[in-house]
Image (cartoon, rainbow, N blue to C red; front, side):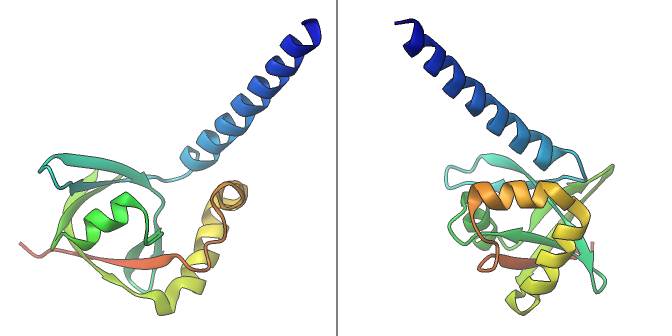
Amino acid sequence: MKYILWLVGIVLGLALIIGGSQIVASERVEVVQLHTINEAGEEVVTRLWVVDYDGHAYLRGDTDSDWFKRLQSSARFTLIRGEQAGDFTHTVKNENIDTINELMREKYTWGDRVIETAMGSRAESNAIELTPEKI
């Protein structure tokens, strides 16, 4: 029984270390808040990484992720970056994914590798170009 408890303790400890490292990796550099609306009409806030390229901010996301699906069904959305909030539109620019992946690796360093290890390769992700809405 003593060995089973030790084994359970080790497994739980490893799970906490892995989960904790993912949280630290994802939140230690700039994170934006994407505000989208779900099918029930409720606002959903998703915390994401962002990089700048060619005069635009870019997000990176998987086609199957819920936030990406909500974004695709929205004409515009709200994004909070630092102290600035604004409404945006988006364009998927997958021809830029290699550049966006490289910029993410440079900006988020080891955190990008930790998340990629947990979630899989980012080569098939979407590069999402953000354009501020003119009021």
